Amino acid sequence: VMLWNYARQQGLAPDTAGAGTLNDYRDGADAAPWALAALIWATEEGILQGGTDGALRPGAQAARCEVAAMLQRLITAAL
Image (cartoon, rainbow, N blue to C red; front, side, top):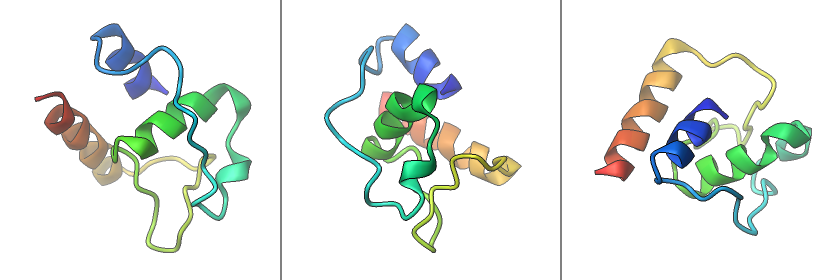
C-alpha cells in the first residue's frame, strides 16, 4: 500500500486499481479490502510477484530482501 500511495503521488500509478483480481494467487481472497486496489496494481505491474508456492501472503511481514526487490521493480518501472 505504501508503494502504491507513493507511486500515485508521483503520477506513476492510477488512483484506482484496474479491473484485475488476485485470483491467480491461492490466498488472494485473504487480502484486506483496504489493501485490495494496491495489491492488484502491484501484481499487475510485476512489483509484487508472490511466492513460488502460488501464495501472495497478504497478511505476512515482508523480509528485507523482498522489500528491496519490490523497490527495485518500482524504480525500474518508473524509468
